[in-house]
Length: 106
Image 1 (cartoon, rainbow, N blue to C red):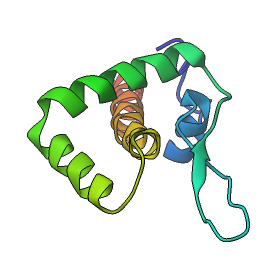
Image 2: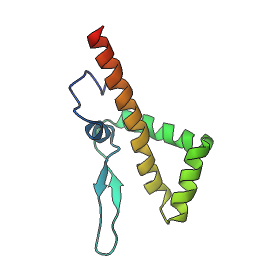
Image 3: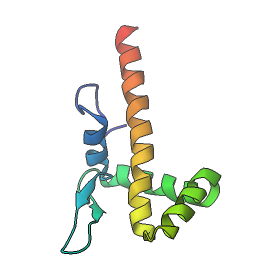
Image 4: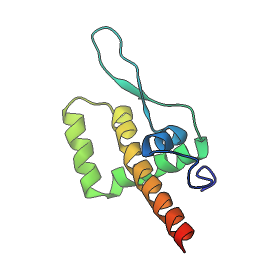
């Protein structure tokens, strides 16, 4: 919540993901094409996303199926977690934006 501050501070879901440290950064070299996670941004928010992903990876059947599928494709657990962090960041951004707009109209 403190990272969000107010409506208009963060212009898009991608900007919120960058603030949360959940945006991908190209880290390709020669023959491999890959991305790494952004290490910048709000570390507390990133930690909260990480804990949410760890819980989902252990308990949620859809997330477990996703992890199995991506592992079969040859992805590492670190890459899978990077991809998964974007989903809760997107959900949080949409929730905060909707709530802030509702407060402005009320």
